[in-house]
Image (tube, rainbow, N blue to C red):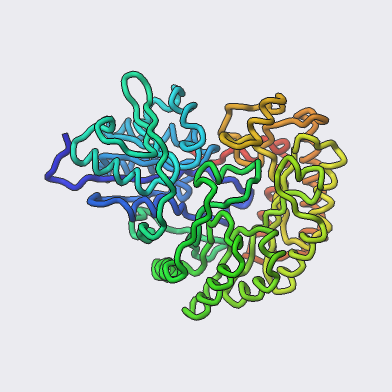
Length: 481
């Protein structure tokens, strides 16, 4: 039974694993845990981003569990962070054996049936599937009152019984008007930055209705796109600034899906006098193509760059990916962004089922031909719950079906109909070295100007690539327990 003489305590943690070769220059906070913290009622809540403790993860977990003495530990994990979440659960319980542990996020949502029978997840009592603010709050209220999970029907919750997990039906998409602003004061550690500048995260919308086969967003949020009121977003940016941020990364799945609304947000930022901050976002080629005038509005609002989802300009890939960005459209969009002074990191997908050596090389040629500042080469990854995974498994093109710690987007877990896995990896590695060692490609962009030491780190990463072998070793998790 809970001790009613002390507040019910919840410790929410985000995993230390990152998927970036430039992680030493970026420490971006987790938005989910501070949003969850804000929407828990009647509990004392603390949040811990383990990305800030990547060199001593175990020590940080043990110390904070010992100090805070939580009744419930909540873990947020992407698929490639799942193994770390299981280890954090084990560490938390080793310090406080009676603590309850709940896992949420993308992996809990997409792979809950596998987690339910996985011995590695033996320390996890609950799973929260889908958006977590409502079900986690209901779980906390039930546990605070001394109820077992099986006595209260909580949509979106899975709970462990003596006969295995029981999975309740999913909760409908949350009404964003009901959500409180993220509780940044709950953070136990700070020091987040983007190329040396204090940074925070804000979301202006959730979900994306587009049907890209490689993406798991629709399985997380359904086929919805919901937007926060512009006034609410402005208030959240102010709150981030008041907490010390001098820049904001917008975490939206598709921030420019509705160009008119995005332009309204940019104008509101200027009207609120917040354009002296630096803003960075993910963005979609199609949105910029529909409304090129969006770009000067972004620049006036203080946007410095975008991570642009190009994926492929090869028509042979479009049918499988269900995303089409032609060369002409992509080139026009990138040139417009650059003309207005925005930094552009272009994302591409390699390892599509029909890829051969020529098509792999053509993607790298595209990266060199476009005036982007940096190219991010993702390997097609068979994430649980995606249409792509089902098709790839059916064709036996997945060479690593269950080693989720390697599902970070950079490590290659597939082969193609025309390339065996080793050949595919060697091609990506060799073409990558040609691209990233090309002085013209490196120095034409703004990457090396972002912060002192970036260029040295850039080439240090290449050297590490050469000394550690090709891709699959370079991008393994680097945190230490």
